[in-house]
Amino acid sequence: MRMLSLRLDEKTEKELNYIKLTLNESQSLVVKEAIHAYYETLVAAESHKSAADIFMDSGYIGSFKAEKDLSINYKEELTKGLERKHGLK
Image 1 (cartoon, helix red, strand yellow):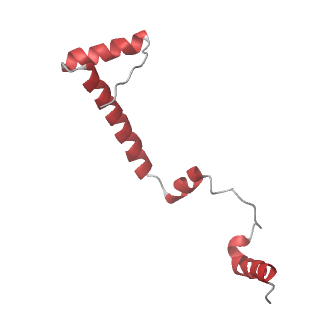
Image 2 (cartoon, rainbow, N blue to C red; image 1 turned 90 degrees about the vertical axis):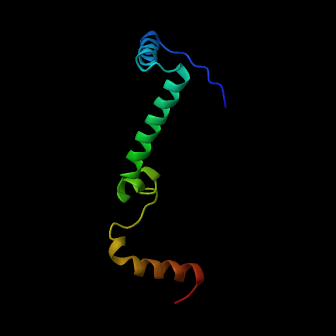
Image 3 (cartoon, rainbow, N blue to C red; image 1 turned 30 degrees about the horizontal axis):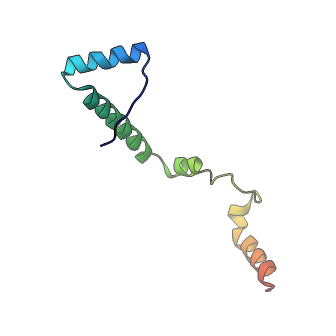
């Protein structure tokens, strides 16, 4: 197991002490449980994202420029690009 050292402001230290005394648990256990709870909250939030949100977060959307009607005529544009690249007609 790894040792962790951190600085707490006075308010956070009081909150930690309150939790320790109320639950009658060690400082280590309180911090571990808090980290675990925070992690679980983040993972749960990530798993509920829509496909659109995942794409937006990835940076993929908007990462290149194309014609505004590309979703309509993508086959024609792909054919043109392949013809230019490979000299086909």
